Length: 270
Image (cartoon, rainbow, N blue to C red; front, side, top):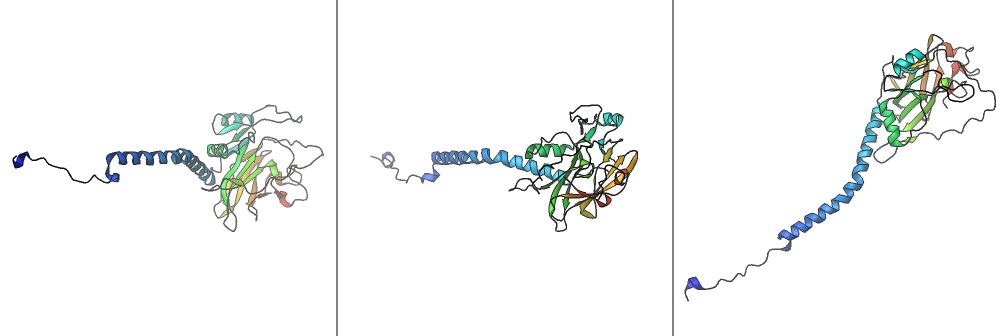
């Protein structure tokens, strides 16, 4: 037998298992499957949290021009505003306490606030006008999201000038939810006569944050054909807003919007 006819024997060792193609395929499949569940579980949650934080940021830095009307009770002017998608129609309440739409009242509702309330689960308080929306800070630098609202009821100022409804919120973070800074006070047990005040063309303009003091803002209003200003300040506990009617027809002692015994009409929000 010639050398060329001699059989050749293969004594080379088999490659390690981690270098085998089948092993690499199985390992890749296992890693892929291990990533699917966390991504499917945390992905939508992370997206929702990011979206909510973005909407919250827009509310914290929200700023409207000082001449923007946010509450309009003059029927002709309100009808014009209601053609804008940023405004909602507010129901009118008569002395029977039955909601009857006797004319149009327009209330301003920023889109980012509506979307944030929907995501945070705080919507459903009814139609209202957004008088002020912005982030505020107290003297210690604590940040709050402050929302001042008003519906169309013109009941006497039992607890706040012009029946402002104030919400002060702890902003949400990546690991914390948005939450009220103070537990809502119990409803006022009032058994006296309910005084429905005529609005005489009541109008509010967008509240303006003080550029030199992040804990202070003002609100301009019109009533009975005259203009006035309301001063508003975050309290020391950073959980409520204190209002003072500085000028205009509502600041006068003879005005039903002013409460006797309260200097300058100073009241705490409800």
